Length: 53
Image (tube, rainbow, N blue to C red; front, side):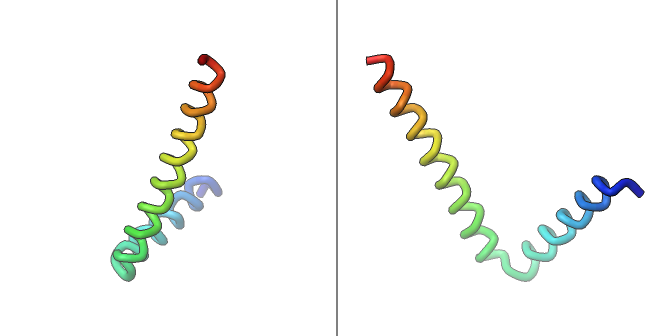
């Protein structure tokens, strides 16, 4: 078995276990990550707007 394939299967198993055992905490974590991504994108857009104007 390929190491990369094994790591992907392990990651998927951990995700499924976490989804079943702790759905609320997983949802909070996903919302936090989405917030970080959104904040980063907004910062990049603000920077690019400041360069253009």
